[in-house]
Amino acid sequence: MVMIREYIQENKQEYLAKLLELCRLPVYVGGPEENVAKCVDWIVHELQETGFSVKVHPTGHRPVIYAEKKGSGDKTILFYNHYDVVPVNRADWESDPFEPCLREGRLYGRGTSDHKSSFLARLFAVKCLDKLGEHPVTVKFLLEGDEEANSPDLYGFVNAHRELLRANGCLYPGWRRNEKGMPRINCGSRGNFIVHLICRTADKDLHELNAALVPNALTRVMQAVASLFDADQNVMIKGFYDAVRRSPALEKAAAGIPFDAESFRAMTGCRRLAGGIGPDQAMLRSTLTPVVSCYAVESSSVARDVLPCEATAHLRFYIVPDQDAETLLQALRDHLRENGFSDCEVIADQDRIRPSYTDIEDPFVKAVEESARETYGVQPLVVPISSGTGPKYVFTELLGVPTVSDAGVGDSLSNDHAANESIVVENYYQNIEHIARIMRIMAKQ
Ligand SMILES: [Zn+2]
Image (cartoon, rainbow, N blue to C red; front, side, top):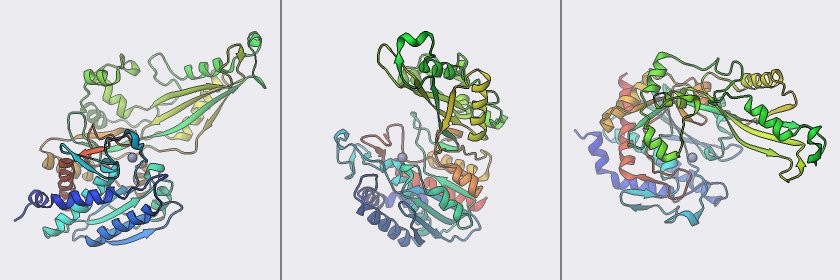
């Protein structure tokens, strides 16, 4: 009997050729508009060739592609992928970003890592099992073309198609290996939202001589920001940590993720960890703990001798399950009022990403974990809540389906969104095996 791994070995040429074809059809903001239809047609064709029934749904932006193929078992897997990429600055690339090129085992090109290889690995995993005479689970694909533009249609589409998208597990685009090459599986993800603190102390900028009588707006806003933190940058807003989901299992999983303090320091130059913690607490803090970051402060004047009448601080809240933006915004307003900063107005952006939670003990997570162990021959890292953010909550909230990023194709040198994006080609072939095994294991559960 031909095994999954052998079958993949024999078909590497085809997998690589198809990835090259897809990377030559870039869809991005400011890119050739005719590429959208060409890329969608290409994907539809490949899905149909693999036996999927496909429907292209027009949206307010780029179309959503939905495809489905029935399996023999009662389990269903939903693959979420995107076919758009981020624009490039050609001057920074060593080779043509849209003409993928192989150098020393790495394939360079826009979309190789984020996320065309992930989509194709899934498609070829289905095809591989097909050829081996296996149809273990029903497979559904949902592909959008606006992921890099914050997925404006995803929530609406999923909300309108809850029945259609029902599944036992959703695979989010695969993640990257860590610096040591360890495969990682991401379960939940953090959410985030942006808040602006605005303080106005006079009708116009005044000569600095007035500073004795007119409060300095910049000083006021900096004081307001400072009041939100203790000296270790823990958040002092009353009730800020109340809704944070913690459990012994979650803490054990987070604490089990290795943190290399030496290489972190070498990479970042960071001298002292925030939160007043030691390296043993680093992963607990970076996965399960919400943070607030002040990323800029502006004032109405930067001129010498001028007293600015208005100043704004820009803050981003990184939140975790089960925190909620509205509750935190109210707590922030209460904090400012109670601490004498009623003159600081709070304006929050509407563009918000909610945190997403998937139980690390869920059978679907276990299937992904077991498959990674079989494929890569090591115990993968299971990250309960990743430090990154994204629209994973659309699937966990609207569909109530466990949603996980598989071990993925990329690695720590993949340069997603930057120049010379690349993958190790072998990781792409391995990902095909990983996905095929997930489907097999699911069917047996
Ligand atoms: Zn991206």
